[in-house]
Image (cartoon, rainbow, N blue to C red; front, side):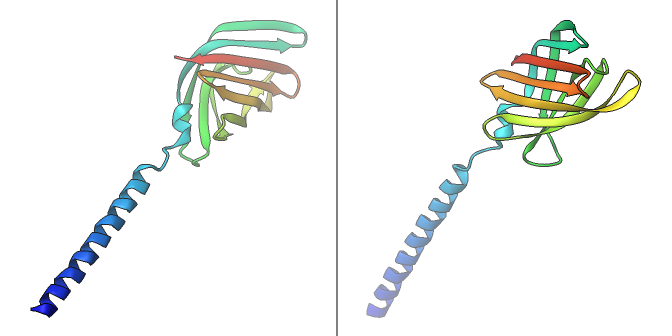
Length: 147
């Protein structure tokens, strides 16, 4: 009977240790942070201003949609109607956890294919801002707020 009691105590100790270890593993998994890009996705509205050879214009009805890229876990897709094509365009951008991003997209400007560079991209609170330019012919500034 002593061996049985000894065995049962050992078994109870092993079960208790297993339960504690399992609980510890579960709580670690639950506390892992989600995808940081979730904070940036959504629809934004606001304005776009541009300068084309000294002539400045504005679009006060700019809509920008931000979604997560399926290409990589550190990329987002920004879609909007951009001045350079007056078409809905989208581009992938690498975004850091603090909300900074850069990117580029191809566009036709004055009948010539260009690579549009997106710079100074920044998510801040509910705001989104960035600059873009095409071969220094057109420079644009976008400032929008999340709906």
